[in-house]
Length: 416
Image 1: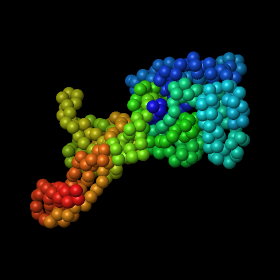
Image 2: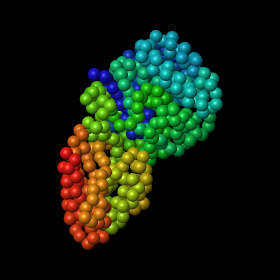
Image 3: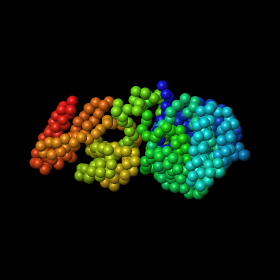
Image 4: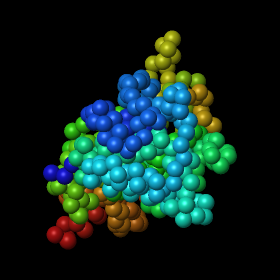
């Protein structure tokens, strides 16, 4: 079976996070050190890895410690070399790397040069790489391609990417986040993006170039049997665990054919927001429900809980698409008394659905039809339609619901 990998990027992607995920997944650090030495720049850096914790979760952090001419170590975001694309290409071609790693590395740098060139209005070969041509970026990109080749990955996928926010100091001065080069790379592949509410640089140009160049598609995970997970840590502590998750496994042919949508449930990524409340009127919570649903939340619900000092409260949960996370958080903070919201990205399976309209003696009702593997598994008249007809005709909601179901099944039986 085809060996596949999926990059899940809840807090973005950077080159060192890719290296960390690969080492965590089993790529030997000594192998990377040995192969990277062939580039001829090993006197400019030292490569090391350590296990760290991010929000209580253990992951691997890979450090690229740069060394100046006096053999002093520098923090890994201090760039001591700047190179042009032709020099980097010659370096990679002369290294005698495994062919797959070589071709992937060249492609990533070419794509990055095209993006930088488009931003600055120069040819890719003329781009003067300050950040991107620095030693650590070369190690990150080539090391990532070496790791993917070592694992035998044949197909590579990536999740939607968070936009981040704020500004960063770059070679050309203060830059908005996402940086222009990252935006241009996203434009090349029409990458799906969303805001997770974190105002930091989450996707670096190096990370964006790796994802945009190597990923076959961006979105939900492919149909695969998961064999191994690699966790690569970022440098900063963030509200969400700053971890890049690399899923490694095998493609499942029976559900990855062209008719996948007709054969099995669809898998999508959703944001789950939770907060507990013990000092808010039920009417305010009801209003919050309406505001969240009208703003695009997929579902909202509460559960009774007992909080500290035995206070009675509710656990309020919101499920939404990642791009709606920020607006849902804004509503929760505005309409409730909560002081904090827990956030996580989860996968959910959803059945294929369609809406059909049926006629009853009181009027038309929309009916939602759900299917699994092409077979109808659920038939439900729309609540709002039943409620409106019940009010207009002064009959019970249950009667309208019963008539709508009967009408649909009569029609379905006639079509058999």
